[in-house]
Image 1 (cartoon, rainbow, N blue to C red):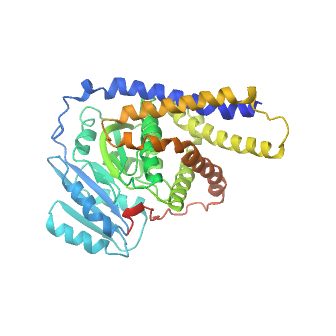
Image 2 (cartoon, one colour; image 1 turned 30 degrees about the vertical axis):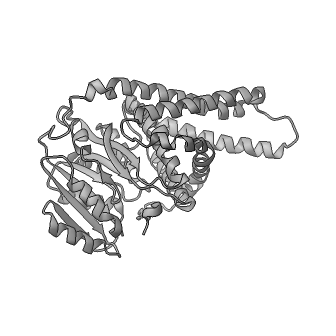
Image 3 (cartoon, rainbow, N blue to C red; image 1 turned 120 degrees about the vertical axis):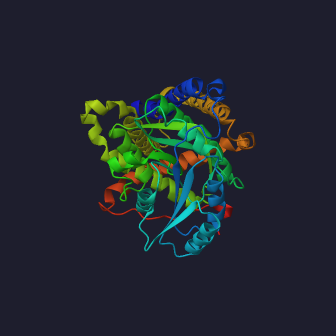
Length: 407
């Protein structure tokens, strides 16, 4: 009875908490009258370096670099790091560098992994502020300006993350992910920001102070999710990280079941890896401001295994009285109502940034069945996989599935 109550109530309570905190974020930091007068160009004289790590990205590079070189910022450079690619990435980058002097190319002799590629780019960059994006990401023209507007009056600012939006929407998986990035990822980032921190500065778009990176040892080459590990290192070292929803970047996401499963399993395993590295936070009262960011994923892991145990009990007691409290129906109805409310509220928050949300709203009815099931299974399997993973094993590049853009 207690286990069933926990499984039913926990997601509903967390959704209500996310919605409440995200609404507060929108009211305090995102209302139109609070950002209407912020200039889209030149709001800070500080120069920036845009870092783009590349590994076998030949077909996608031209569009990515064109978007990066077109940003509305007075002083910037673009650094593309070719991490030992075995396709035409190197020759493509060299050809593009000959056409624009703002583009510099760094060639690594052998594949080192994304973390070390980013570190190489940071070490050769000319400027203190680094904008890091993926090689398949199209940077919005004003994204740099929106992130850099936080810099001048915040000496403890270590990083700012932006708002990824999905480009590929030709399949059911693509359309569902459009809604997921609003309903789950965007909503949670807003809620976490109101708690004073972030679980992750997204690897697909992040603005970093180089001196802060140097102080914490840059990106971890051993973590499966180097962006999560870096975020925690910065915050535990006393640096502040922020979320800027106006800083848009358009990305590609998996459109096959195999690609989706590999991605979510890596996210789950990498997230647990970082949590394990930061469990000592419980013994450090001075850093308890980060406790909500630690406890929420830990409770979610407990919930995932609790659900698995409850389903196992149900299967072994077919034909007998079920342990669901009050028959489970009222709680299920409340959960579904909260889910619909979360859909509506998150779409309302993100309506200025993505005009296609209305066209994917219908497909979001499949989210609890499709993506929720995938995420739950990934959480269940990630923990034993992490325990069996060799220590100090370097995380290597994993070529993602990018749907119809894959070629």
